[in-house]
Length: 109
Image (cartoon, rainbow, N blue to C red; front, side, top):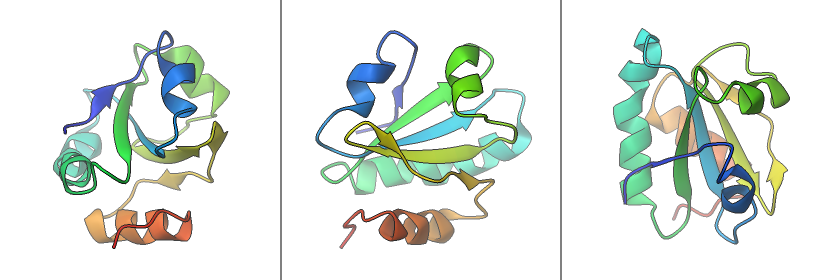
């Protein structure tokens, strides 16, 4: 399964699901966001039974970005049972994201 688009309309429903939701805050003009996007997409496919991956375009969903004080992109936040984790700002690679997910209690193995 590939990453899903998160909007104000579906945000609450998606963040309160039983499967953890990894949200990638990004923008189309952000070169680094485009560079890390393939790793995020691959996580969505490789761990589809363990996490859902969603993407929030901060230009289109400014209220959500403001609520979570997104100042730098890409920023990743994991939502479990409606609660937001500490953010991972500008991850360097897939390995760093996987380590962070494990620290948040996601079982990837």
